[in-house]
Image (cartoon, rainbow, N blue to C red; front, side, top):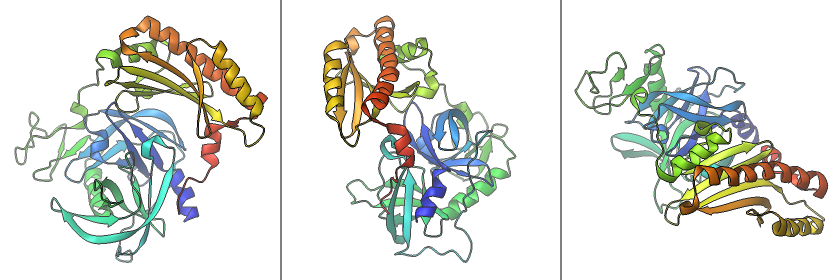
Length: 371
């Protein structure tokens, strides 16, 4: 399984929109990124990031609400490897087969969980699903279910609430059929009609309705551009004024991620409490001789106005808290610019002078699997 996990590091894609986050995976032959439709629904473009690609915006080019599938355009420049679909007479999925579920739950960089197929005959909404017990969490949606030979046998789609890790994966024959039909459209943006299953393009759509059966359909290209309102609009104006790409910073509802030098800052707005947080995850505690580092952090907490150091598990975090009633672009820009600058400064100091460990380099090297 270890070799399979390493191969899939190169094809697993993090997906973020203003509304949700999820997982996708790259398929070389159709040259698309596969994910769930519910991950990217109502978006013309989404943010993708991965080990073999730079963070960027790509178009949603295929939407299939019936099978909960969507395809994204692949980046023009990438080094993503090829993986195979588990189709053909020689590949049979049976109860008890070992499987891996791979994705980015909770925004983590790469998680694989091992389980077994528990049922191959579960029918729901006129579709058959593979049931398995490989742990799935929010953010896994759209990731691949992989067999012991490294073939994609399904697309992880949803879990049963309070179902003790019962996961549902759309079997790969549905995916293969959608790929074949999509390829016939020769690069057009396409939606599958949920009523009659015919594909509808920008040229064939009839004023928002399927020309075959009259059902209302929604092309990805007809989605309205996202426009933030209220506090989210102020935060995004502040991010833009600070010189960062707002669209690339979005990571789900009221969440943003900023890269400032070697630091990464997560901004979140909690509407119920009115609290806005900026958390810069700087680096990890050293494995030994942490006393001088603790003393340095405590001293800095007395000296840096408006910011605060804390430690969560092994993470060293520099944070900013502000309530929405005190926020405007001018005050927010001043406070968050200070956080961005100090984050980029302090992570270097902590690593070079106090032996802290680079957080993101270590994540790339660490084996984050449960196999």
